[in-house]
Length: 287
Image (tube, rainbow, N blue to C red; front, top):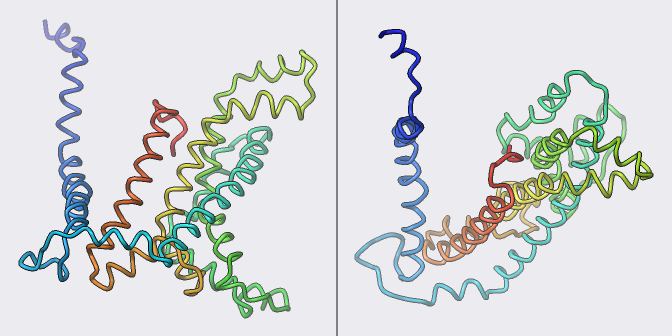
């Protein structure tokens, strides 16, 4: 009887109930630090107040005028421009790196991927400041190589390079995961049907890696749209992104208009997340 009870199969609904209990603490933190602030921001959108003093709350819809101000429109345009350009560059280099690694005969390919994502384990602000030092004329590289580099801090080039260097691993990993799932016999079948290596790449490999490309694109678009530390450090105040607008509004205690802009960005991000869940329902290509 004891042996039979030990080998008893636990019904799926009991396993699911046990996992639900384990997830309750996480859900509590999620509601407290994610859902609750979102509700507060939505409320602050429709009131006018001094800071967050409840006694000063008055109903108002004038906060939405921040969306039509010139600085906000420019920041939105810059955010979209840099995000799209960074994503396109990351798709090119991400596909190049992932496909080269996929076709290589290296035994431990995951060690190479580990080396690729290793810098991501360090503090984000430290990495951006390191890039800022490298982009200045007098840096370690100029000392070692014996000549000065041009100062690109505060330019579009600095922002784009910083975003590509920072977020490229988010493109390489999902693309490589998609490539690893391709049946090897498909390559042989494509060549047997008369396709050249170039045509095989565009007609077989790229379509099968499309899910990873889309997942990586969305994972790069999200931080590029909402980030403020990278453009603030590398842009040196000359380049304004929407994240910088939100930071300035909240630093100036203009929580009402800051909430308007933040909620708009949240809606965009949630829309992108819905797209990725529709395309990749199993989450196979997510990091």
